[in-house]
Image (tube, rainbow, N blue to C red; front, side, top):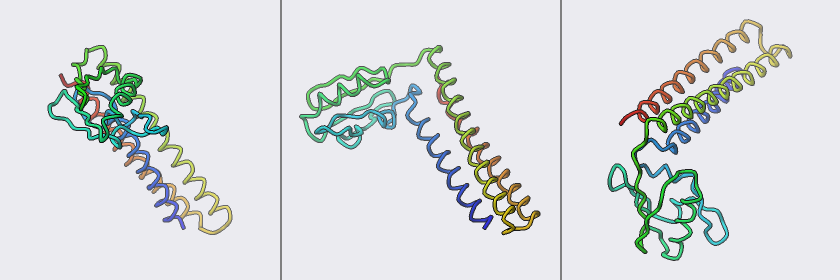
Length: 185
């Protein structure tokens, strides 16, 4: 029973880590990446749709994203969606494709991004601790209802702590890597 609880909580922790990595991928670090456009939604026949589902998104050079819509009629909608987004990029359209030039980041902007990275990493750690609390509560519940002995419950809680420590290290590693990427000139 405790193994099932641990497995369930580890799955939740992995999802938190994956979510954090997705958040990091969508942060603009001065280098072009298709993931930058993941949160940009285009009004496609009345339905908000991610850009990568209505167009081919490619990165021909380190500071350039090219968006080629499947349908030419949606080109203007994609431009509007990019302008409305918080990316701060100006789309250039030639009638068939949109080019996004990624400007060099200023030192001030880099420091703001590092703060954002740290904030997101801290939120992920809080989520991990909440998952640990849920797991420990489940183990204590089993112990109270006499389904598992006290020493087994203690081992379960220790295993839960080791799991959290492992995932916190992974979050720190992801944070450090993203910080390094952001500060790279």
